Length: 250
Image (cartoon, rainbow, N blue to C red; front, top):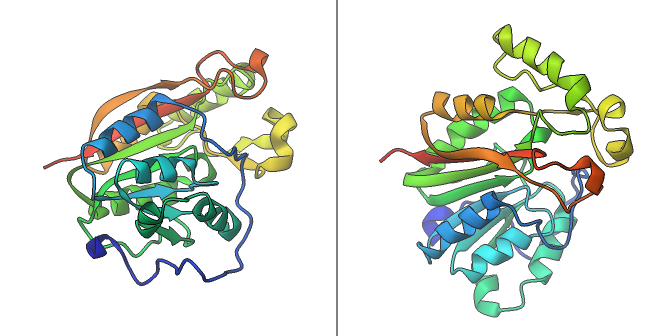
């Protein structure tokens, strides 16, 4: 619907230059309970609009389109967006796809126009200040009863848990709202440093839950997101990420 769109959503045929986005992308999204819950939620509201932040190659956006949604597919890397559109073969679904390359959270989206916003494995690239602004904006963009779906790297990832968790817990006890904002990637994730920024922002369930509650969301579900089967198997024990679903109160 036009009510969920804005002048800053780009034409399908327009090219932009933009910085490369950090991270690992796969052609199909790794199945997590956060993604599954998001898609189940979409099934209930065909014809409404959702925002997929940091869409990468667009797998989650395409699945939402298949559920009948209008989708704002957001990524700062234009090549990802163009690839994601190319993969949408159905003309009717392509009509409901809108590409947006502006950096989150600075998106021009009308208040109360979105049914859901999904940030699947992207918040760990953002500072606490950006996340705080983003959560306020998401709440404004959502319809009453709309939901936010998040998956983010966990402080209990087995690769760095023994070394970094004591630092994280110390900062947490000292009252830091974002105690995992400065994970040093070359030190704690050297094998992945080629594809990541120097710092990552990791979280635990309480930090993520408190953040949503500070911004007026009601937390519906929070828990570990297993990434076992994705990456190096011996470095996976089911606590690789944290997921949360928040609801904008009616």
